[in-house]
Image (cartoon, rainbow, N blue to C red):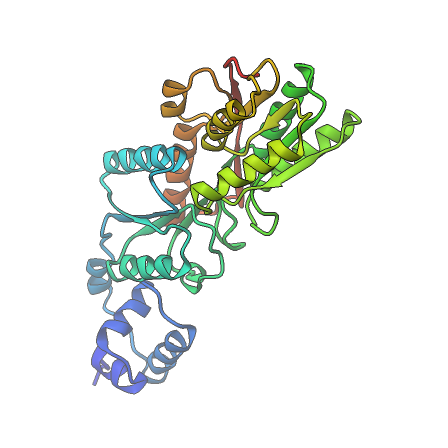
Length: 325
């Protein structure tokens, strides 16, 4: 008698649903479970029902998005752009705000995988979560290094760091400070710091960095920037790691009776539409959010079709001409 799915499940000591997921490469499964099911199919000489597999393989048209927080203008505008474009292609979107909490992120991933999403687009820092090692789930990362199998979409962080630092130098600043994320964070954004340091050294200037973690509370950032003004009374330029920090620095400068740009030249990073609208005077490096979203979806679609993709896609940046630098 021809073996059935039930026979495979019984021999492998798993459910029929698990056998179906192994056959159709859907959702997260441990390698041990996959091996048990494959061994049982081989022993029974089980041949899957092609028609049933085709029915099962119908896409859910669900895409999961996991980002640190949509309250940050960069992530907020990026998620909006991704959702709009995915919707136009017939996808529904499930969004998770991880707040860079690994446990929360794992919980979101479990929920997304149980909903049988077709793919994921992620912009979180946590790269050691086992769900991201799922070879059967198409995943694309934005400005984050997850693992070697997940393609990265990013703006040209090194070019941005060069543009910002060189502009400050060209405007006459020599004592230039850079605020940056922790060096331990494995992200392409670290190339901004590298470009700043390289450009400073190339111009015979001393690089000075202040570490400002993206996740720390607002009051802690204020303490760091207050200390920066106290410790660097002669600073002439600041390259801020993002526009929100640049806006905060502008406020604190007033407390220290420092005028921008007369006393201190200032340049930010991200250049979101909302920041350019509410703070148009801030000179900043613009990340091309629309192009990043388009490329991320394009690469995800390639992965959904099991086509080969590059490891990294780097998009150019440019400077928004404000009056702070």
